[in-house]
Image 1 (cartoon, rainbow, N blue to C red):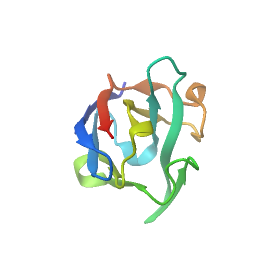
Image 2: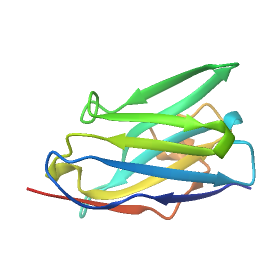
Image 3: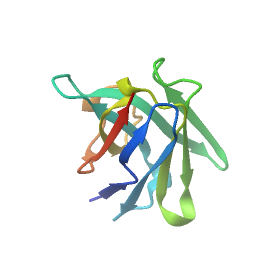
Image 4: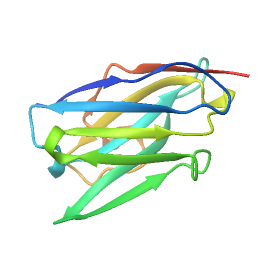
Length: 126
């Protein structure tokens, strides 16, 4: 079993930055793919980014087009924590952000992930 706890959300202005953290416990997350999803009011949850370890020091990252170039995902194996650095935030980035994990391949769809955090609210004012 894996437990995920997100933190770092808040209220910021357009153009500001935030860093979200997802602390994992229960398993060594370097064996897992970790993802970030978000859900805006009245919308379905959507993929934001993921990171997958390829063995050794190699890893792979993926980003939704809407955040590519502004968001960066990174992992700290020693702390069992994954981060989402969000720069140049826009009002349309306002959503609840969820961390997810899976021991499978992990991709861009919710069904590929087995474990979810409770979410952290990010609000970007214009």
